[in-house]
Image 1: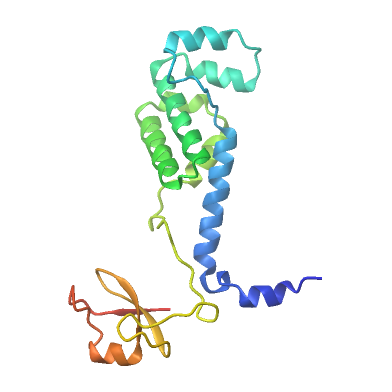
Image 2: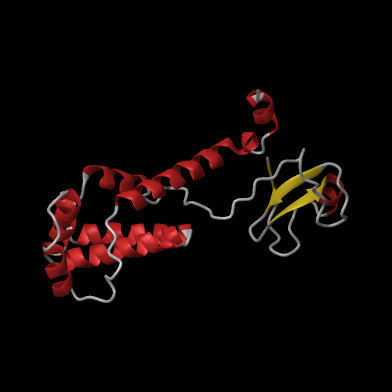
Length: 197
């Protein structure tokens, strides 16, 4: 039997719970959007008229009705092209491109609000969850555990009394001696280091 409490105590995520849960929520939201958006493989190869003829021939259901309602106008066709960009970005595991496509879709829906009436409620819910937050998502967050990782000072390469410090131009690890030597100021931007926990 696994001792989950022991695993959690040793976990890197315990030190960064908020970032971990936000990243996890964004990943789930992206997956749900990917599952809910309609995808047309040949959207780049065909014109709007060709797609209208093709999709009118399909059996009527919720999915085809949604696509057909978007194919009634050029604005809806642009929405389907944005869905294609989101689908492709998710397949390529490019979160940045995916969120940019979602932001473009939200701007498009603000310009053409009549399209919102065609959208399923749960799709709109997940699109709104992924809206840009006050603290924008920072890609490539590195989780560091002082217990698991060997961390050394950027200046003297010692591994005792290390702090994670931040200035305007960088984020580095410094030991207490080097912090005192630099008077807690960056030599490049001359900004006071702030010690991050």
